Amino acid sequence: MKIEAIHLREVQMPLAHPFETSFGVTTGRRILLVELESEGLSAWGECVAGEHPYFSDEQVDTAWTITEMELVPRLVGSEIASGRDCPALFEQVRGHRMAKAALENAVWEMDAQRQGISLAKLLGGTREVIPCGVSIGIQATPEKLMETIAKEVAAGYQRIKLKCKPGWDAKIFAMVRERWPEILLSCDANSAYRLEDAERIAGWDAFDLLMIEQPLWYDDFYFHAALQRRIKTKICLDECIRNRRDARAALELGSGKIINIKVGRVGGFTEALAVHDVAQEFGVPVWCGGMLETGVGRAHNIALSSLPNFSLPGDVSASKRYWAQDVIEPEVTVSTEGTIVVPTGVGRGFEVVRDRIEAITVRKKTMRA
Ligand code: OSB
Ligand code: MG
Image: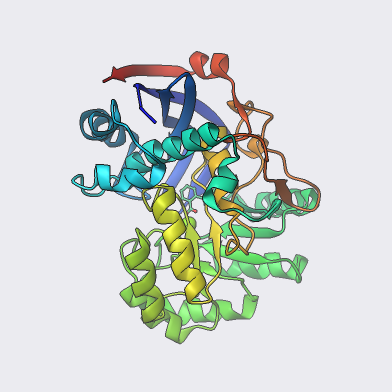
């Protein structure tokens, strides 16, 4: 396919509810969206870089700059067979995986349209529905947290993940477990602990958590192995897995027993599929993480989650948990069984609502060959 034009745009969207993690509070999102044009077709990609370089070293403005100055010139005007060709095209640029993923994923979406199949099918997906969990931010009070959990459990979500940090951990887990002894419960520290906390973290074994996500440094999987040897609860790796080599090294070391795959964090669908396959080889389940995406990224996450080794409920949940109005139609909805139906229509399977996107666009740039 010949990529004739690439449009970059930044949209701004207020979150329906503020989202607090150990690294800060997000009240609204600034999001880089890319749109490709090829032979009368249009395909979209979402960059999951945040407003600040707090989750990873990328941020929306660095992603915009690298996309405009380095990545688009390599892609626009090119004749490309599939999304699998993007990593080689972008190889000279080190890092900036979230920026690369937005473009690569749009190429995959375009390819699916050209072949007249769903993105899920193109990726090798096999599931008709995906199991869903929710990620619940740190709340103003424990009472508010209990209310929020009650609402999500009633909605049918299959797994509750609690964001945690020192001061918002064991006491909270105890309280939640007392009221809901049976639910699938996990926590995500986003690197808020150090190896000295190992004893304390071992104490959480009492709460029968499904996993503890990225407890230590964002760029570490060596010391995570030391921690994993000292606790019974499975560690799930998020921030530190950048590619298939990291996945293999971490699993050989015993740094964790579950992997959260975020397609933006690993640089696009090609690498996400490779991480999926490495984990499967080790008998390790994966699940799809979220980055407070609009419907564009959410649709891509649903397609990816349909692969066979995405066997644990992911963080991909309903549009309305994040947005008063999403940018796709229909919005993403979750059944009372806590599942999302994988669309079988061509491409992403959700329409992008162009007027809505136009209305929230704050900057835009078109690049042609
Ligand atoms: O670590 O999984 C994370 C949101 C922003 C940055 C990092 C993370 C998260 C989430 C939310 O947990 C997942 C979602 O619901 O989109
Ligand atoms: Mg995480």
